[in-house]
Length: 495
Ligand SMILES: C[S@@+](CC[C@H](N)C(=O)[O-])C[C@H]1O[C@@H](n2cnc3c(N)ncnc32)[C@H](O)[C@@H]1O
Image (tube, rainbow, N blue to C red):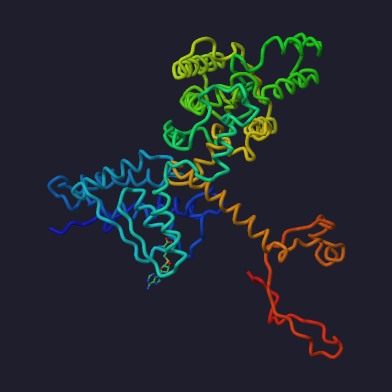
C-alpha cells in the first residue's frame, strides 16, 4: 500500500495562514528573515508546516492502527495540534515545540530524518526552518546574494553559535568593565576579576531558562506593583557615609521621594556607587553570572523581571512581584542564595551584601521608562562601556543576545562582532570617501518649495541617496558653457 504523507491529505490552513500573515508584517523585530528582503520569500510558518507534513504519514496510511475514519480523523487532529503549536509567534523561544515536532517526525522515518535540499533557496526560508527542525539542510541558488544569505544562516551562524565576541573593543571593554589591572577604577578589585576570552567562552551565558518576562507590559491600575530595587555589596557604601549625608541634608526619613533633599541624597548615593568603591566582587564575571542567573531563575514564578543591571559593587532590579510573593521575601531569598554561592566560589566568609536594600515603586509609564533607562544605562553612565548593551550583565545586553537570532540567541557573540566590524568599515569608508558625500544644509529657499523641510531650516541632514552623473558643457549658447549633468531623469524611485 502506498504511504500517503499528511501534506497530501490535509493541513491546518487557517492557523498557517494567520501565522504567515504575522510573519510577513514589517517591523516585528530583528530576525534572520530581516537581513535582506527576498522577493517571493516563503513565510517561515509555511516552510515549517510543509516540512513537517511532508515527513509525517497521514493516518490513512496505517489502517491497522487507525482502522476507522474516526480513528484516522482523531490522529490527524493530534498531528494538527502539534502543527498549531508550531504556528505560534516567536517560536525560537519555544524549543520544546521544536523538540516535540522532531520526535514526531523521527517516528515516521525510521529514526533518521532525510536531508533537505532546496536548489532555489532564495531568502532561505525552507533550509532555515529545516535546520531548526533538525534536518540536515542544503541550499543552492544562482543568485550570489541568496547564496550569501544561506551561507550565513546555515553555515556561519551555527559554526559560531555560543561563542563570545572576538572583536578587540568587546574584549577591552569587558576587561575594563571587569576590573583590568590598568583601570584605576578597580584598584581594589578581587584577584578573580579578569576573565580571558576563553574563560568567558566557558561561561554558559545562556544556561538559564531565559528572560521570559521580556516584552511584558505592566499595568498601572494596581498601586505599588512595580518595584525598583537596589542592593549593594557589604563594602560598597558605608552606612555612616549615608548617615552623614542625611544629617547634612536634614533628612529624618519620612520625606516623600519627590522631596528635593531626597533626590539629592539619591544622586549622591548613585554617584558614589558608580565610582566603584570597595572590593567590587561583582566585577568577577563568575559572580555576576550567579547573580544574573538567580534573578532570571524566579522570572515569571515569583515576579516579572522587567530590567536589571549588575554593576561591579551593586545591583539594580526592576520587578513586578506576582501575587503571593512579598518584596521582602524575594529580595531576601535572592541575596541569601547569591551570597552563599559567591562566598563558596571565592572561598570567603563574612557578609557579602549590605543588609539593607532600597526600593521605590514605579508610579506610571513615564516613570517606568525612566527607571528602565536609568538601570540599563548605568554602566555607560559610570564610564564602564560605551553602549548599554555592551555591559554583559544587564537586561540591555540580554535583550541584544535574545534578539541576535537562532533559535536561542546563541549567535549573540557573532552579532556583536558583525556590529563592531560593520562600524569599523563605516568609519574607514567615511574617512576615505566621506567628503564625497557631504550632508546638506537645509535653507529657507529649499523649505519655501518643500514645506515639510521647514523644521529643518539651518540644520545639516544626511543624504540618503546620490545620483552620480557626468557633466558636459551646455550646448545652449545662453548657458555659456556651464556644466550640465548628462541625465535622462532625476527620479530615484517613482514608487
Ligand atoms: C521565488 S524565489 C525562492 C524563494 C524562497 N523559497 C524563499 O523562501 O525565499 C526563487 C529563487 O530561485 C532562484 N532561481 C531561479 N532560477 C534558478 C536556477 N536555474 N538555478 C538556481 N536558482 C534559480 C532565484 O534566484 C530565486 O532566488
